[in-house]
Image 1 (cartoon, rainbow over the protein chains, first blue to last red):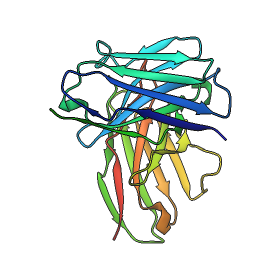
Image 2 (cartoon, helix red, strand yellow):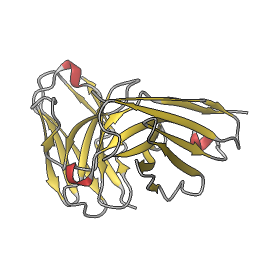
Image 3 (tube, rainbow over the protein chains, first blue to last red):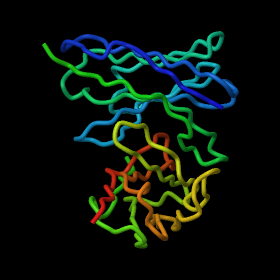
Image 4 (cartoon, each protein chain N blue to C red):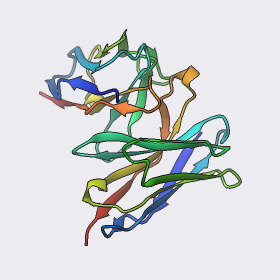
Length: 120
Length: 107
């Protein structure tokens, strides 16, 4: 059974950097892409970026200048950094495992979510 | 960017009803569409992928169809556990985009 467990600071001040980590338990770490997705009432679900076990990344162009996703295969973990946060970055952040395109390129396992609040 | 539009935004129905949710893309995406169910306070759960393939363990009351730009998710006989929000998601471009969600409410 695959489980994703995420953690990180959820209360930030404007201009600070959001840092979240996701640990993967069970299943293979290689052979998949590991994504970050956020959800807000205004924008719904929004894909942020992803990484594979060898460190190949892909980002949402609208966030690319502020986002970085890293991986630590030795710990089966991956992480998200989002710089210069504003109120527009508030929402619930999820980590997720994405299947390869041959099986639909969909998100089959999700973390529990982290509520992110930006307030001075 | 590929934009996904779901309709309706809210759907009121009763237990036992058959309901259909539509997802439209602003450009063709082949069959690269997935559907998710989300309940309050929980992460989305994968229901269907490649437009019409039922995810393992998901009830056969759920079915999906469509290709190109128009897709549907049908629930054949609503059960109390089905009242939730449903999201579509496309992958036919270098990034992934979701519909805005359809909230299925009890009438």
